[in-house]
Amino acid sequence: MLRHITIRDFALVDRLELELHGGMTVLTGETGAGKSILLDAMGLALGDRASADAVRAGGDKAEIHLDFDLAGLPAVRHWLEQQELEADDECLIRRVVQAGGRSRGFINGSPVPVSLLRELGEQLVDLHGQHEHQSLLRRDIQRSTLDNIAENDTMLADLARQADRLAELDAEQNRLRGGHADQESRRDYVDFQLQELDALDLAPESIAKLEAEHKRLANAGDLLQLSQALLTQLSEDEDSAQSRLGQAVRALDEQLAVDPGLGECHELLASASIQLDEAVDSLRRHAEGLDLDPAHLEALNQKIQTLSDLARKHRCNVDQLIEVRDSLHQEREALDQAGERLQAINAEREALLQAYRKSALALRQRRESAAESLAEAVTAQLADLGMGGAALRIQVIPRADGSISRHGLDDVLFEVRTNPGQAFAPMHRIASGGELSRLSLAIQVVASHGTNIPVLIFDEADSGIGGGVAEVVGRHLRQLGRQHQVLCVTHLPQVAAQANWHLRVSKHSEKDNTVSDVTLLADDDRLQEVARMLGGMKLTDTTLEHAREMLERALPG
Image (cartoon, rainbow, N blue to C red; front, side, top):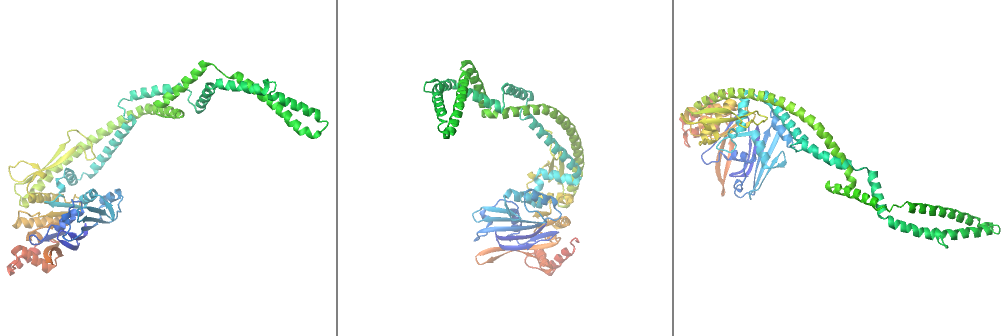
């Protein structure tokens, strides 16, 4: 329920802090006093469109704070948790409108877009009358109202689980198909790609070996020429390295007997001579092994070109072709498994779809039965509310496309007529705001045990009525107040007298400004206000006695 409201610099309000209570609360006041300002402020805080006109003249910004008690509202707390907003038994809503028209919204201190304010507001407050928050005009609310009356919660929960599972199966089916309508075509395409890649020796070492061999053969002529030149310098010339080194070793052989100190030098040169001989032999063998076969080189060129073409085709480097091949093998395996899984999905989906449709048809029967009884009860209430000849008709309409939803296969439409012989039409086509308010009131009275919205607001619900009907309206509102927090703007004393709490809106001048104020009335002041509503500004003993009688006749509780 709404516990507290604070308004600053909004419309005609300078500053207002108001504590609210459960039950039925009425707002009264003289014409033009601004009785709807409180409701307008609440509407703004709950997501109505903001404009610079909302800011009181001379103010730089308007602020509205709402403090809700969420005890007994687990769905609202769950919604707050889903939005990653602090969720406990208290919910603070704040809306700030700058003089330039820009606005900001906050929930529990966190800035939020206006759309979230509106979404939260629809769960907390239901406003009836000539106001934007007329939830019963919404088809989804009409459906949920009927389902609440029919106590379809368990059946709806089962349907929702079945619909969610069907959605999961559809999503898995689309994923397994990979976006390809023809699985065989995709399988043939993957097979073709694998034939090209599997025909090659794709391994890290083989690709490296191929590239090295190609590089060596491509440069074989230069390598052979270099080898021949080195062999000439090292071995074949008369003044070659081998010849000179051999001469040096022999010269030292002759002097070792004279100077033993040359032994180390002799040993090193002799070792170098041996290593040089081995190097020359190795170089000669390598030169003899160089392949100058153009046909073999061309074959290597072709392999390298094939790898490059495939890499370009798959948009990767040559060394990444191995990953591409392995990925295609995995996809091929998945395609084989997908076929089996798709068969299992189709079987499960068909069985689940039959169960869903069976449940949905059972739900349709419950809805049709509840629609008839609800329409009769609301029509009877409308007669009590001064709308004799008005009637409600509730249609349960199977969706033409048979589309599956968490709410079944039907749409629900509330249709009304306001006069005998008039054709039934959807509620939103009703011209009179007062008629819509009383129709909403009648539905709320009948369906009050099923709705979870804690705060019900009726703006001029008694428009166009009076006398005994007005008292009936007041009694209905007070009955609603036993299960909800009811706020009602009224100009009828018969309605005001039924309230648990009475707020009076007054307007007065302060310097050059006109200011509206709201006061919670005690017993004596309330008697005076009801008497004023009965007889005008001049109060007589008769008027006061009549007002006292009205207050004493109010329903208990």
